[in-house]
Image (cartoon, rainbow, N blue to C red; front, side, top):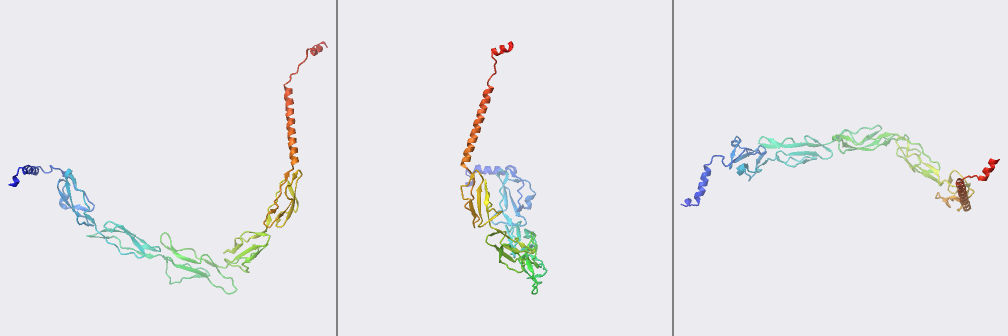
Length: 390
């Protein structure tokens, strides 16, 4: 027979020897790995040792379902290690929730264990839970919180004001973005009118906690009267009065030969005062005369205006190279330029000579003193003999 060929005899002998080996002689694996998405079948849970070649089967955990084409088994392989587990179970889907009106649903995944978040558009706030988790519900999975809703942020009715009113009414519902405009009551003819102080309109907005608030304080209606403003050496170009109320303006200009200090336009403010303050018109003046080594001979004044003439003279020993008479032009400049007083040439020469002479005298005196210190006083023998004889 073919099975009894000589080549098969060694193979059959090896297989028979393996079959007769004691259980576990080829090695074994320990407890199979614990998987987050599946668990061992009951018959394998109680075992602690699995011989090489043993196969164990897993069942998907609650919330998971089988992946088609993937085997739910692991095998104890050579070297006593379990085969690499595949993802043979995947999370069940909770499905897409319905759309969130006036808001958005932020989704990264819809499977078991995933989390979705909700947010509202500007002007709306979330009522309900801002997150939902895909959890187990019996044999299925579902979102653990109902879909929230987005409501328009409400504001209380706008505040009323004295001597005025706003554009809303008692039946109006105020929500984010609503606007009201204020106006002042009319008064009988001949009576001072009310002025609207502040922003005429305010709108419904929200704070950091998404509570509805108005954008600012309402305006006020009050009587504002500013006094008449006059400028000496100036005149009004607009705003001739005779009375002035809130936000009324006056513009001024100065007469010829004067310049304005301050703003040319002033506005009546809520405190019954002008802002900026009423300007002044000052005379146009040329720069003050500063003359070194000289003075103004004629035409001297505290301030010089256009057309003024002055004559300048220098002190003794100084000379003037320019014109002595100058005048203030309409450009507020002196013409010709302010002259300078310069020391005369012969004075400079005399000073040089005097300095040289002084230096020469000092030198001679110094040399004389030095030569006297170097001499020694001596007495002749004849004088000494005469003195003794006497």
